[in-house]
Length: 226
Image (cartoon, rainbow, N blue to C red):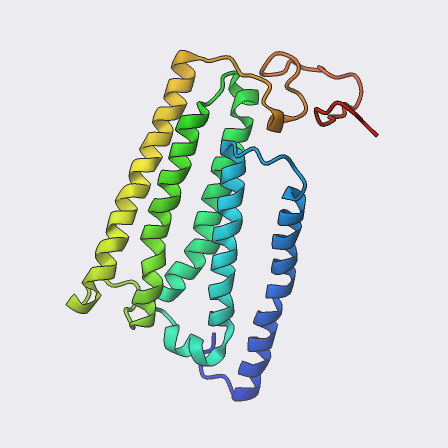
């Protein structure tokens, strides 16, 4: 937008309007952190996906503030810096949210559980892979490498190699996750009542229709209640 030839005053307006977007975005991030505050620290697989999403989404938002500056955006326009920015915010954020929701609801949908050890390993592999893929692209963009090109100068080869290795790791983690789901469906381990799963898991999984005749409440497991 800043590169289409608009005047200085219009650039200043859109720069300010774009930076203001950081306010509700910051409120969302702190709301998510407040939701986690005070809860038992059980690093189950869905919780790891949530924490990973918050970290990556926040990192992508910080690079968005950089791109909101009209002077910087003119230099970084159509470079790999923009690619890294929207992949951190949109692609990685969406993928981590989907995988977190899938691992959270899988016992309720299928009646089988996913191995926590395998799920945690998949998260670590995916987290390392996506960061190796997209974080070096910030440096490529700052160096001036344009996007949408099939070839590049030899000076960009180092960070492109790191990014390629990260993409291979990410692809491997995707097939690893399919293997985890296959193991869960074949072995069909019983879906236990993990603390983080909450409502609906006191009966058989998946729940039958009209399981609860009234609204159910979940209380923390403690010796005393106020």
